[in-house]
Image (cartoon, rainbow, N blue to C red):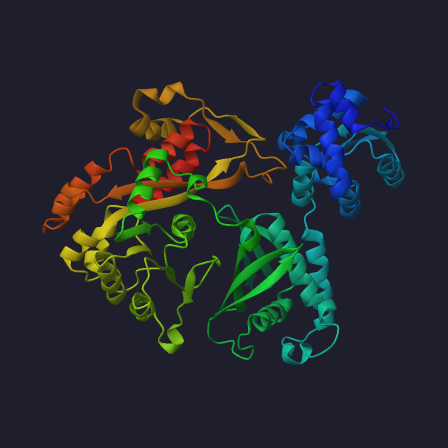
Length: 568
């Protein structure tokens, strides 16, 4: 097709009966006041959806509407248009047909953008309509910083020459530091990590190279490899940003700092450790702009969620969340706290470190260097007249006993514990030295959880069960195992070829009912385990993850991985 015609969006929507004259008039008045684009006003007022507007424009212009959510974008094609122009013109190159390019535009009525795109691409354009939201997500996902990071790493290596140590103390005082290659390299690395939804950045010096990896959806992916000699410069610069001792290379250090990436504030937790070939640095990225998830958004089953809400609103008692590191325990605790955070309640948290800042809550960072540990802060916190207390982790006998006494004396106490499953939590508390009567009287609820990767909707395809997968599912689904459709992601541009996009929680719950409490008061551990498992029937990790597999949310492979973690 040739150059599109100039059209009026409001008139098109009225003609296609997607909008009334009254709604159009109302939106035009709002546009005059706010200056926002008319299409955005329609969406914000709830008159039409973004998809309906795009489909209407496509029908009017007689061009296809493409849902980028289910479109496999090829990176070598989309990068034919520089990222700055893609964002400026709200356009992406979708296909290379030789003589022409198929280009998706969020606003195909922008004739100036169309003309500029044709000039830059130097080919005829076949137009398609896409939504702006999906277009921006595609741009964020597709324009990786790998080449830029490699180039900056080489630039830094050239600048360092053969020098193996950098005096960043002196460098910090020099003007123009923001232009230093090491700073530009780190900034680009952070931008790429945020675009890829990475939770951690690993900078690992090897014998002949520096390895940089991102953890995405719980799995590490190699981002790039660089010259080993820049490792020292990166480690020193990160220490400087964290306020750590840049002269100390023999001992591990922990710190934190903030960075701003595309107007998004990111809190970074840094951990350095001396290794054979230099200092390894791992950064946990905490996106403050993403906000905390509510309880209804963490993936917990409705019945279990209802019990958690009932128990957490009691006037006293302890609620434990268990699971390995990185299983989402903090997210669950914060989600529960956010519902209890009202003006009528005083909430205190004791954490190491404070991961998310919550308004209206008194958050305390423990500091073992000055003997400000969990137990000491908890004892002092009880004198602050709290209603709800969150203890980051039950690490020792003193913390356990103090927390349990608080739970028995009119306080709701949340905390975490490292056990494989829910029934092991009371046993673990006893092993830590907690009196049996305290465990029975104070503990109300134990939740065990894992995070499981979700199948990418854009490339999900039928997956015939392998014999071992069929047998594993049959344990939970019984004869219904053959009544479901099972899927697996083939890998596409949406999920960076992994077949998974995002994660969701998998949960099991042990409620300390009267029979369970009576069993906990007995010396016979096996009796307690049997009664506890009977109480949990149908509320186990294995049952929940099997239901997700049957619903097509995740794969049997992921389910078996989660189950093995719980069984270890």
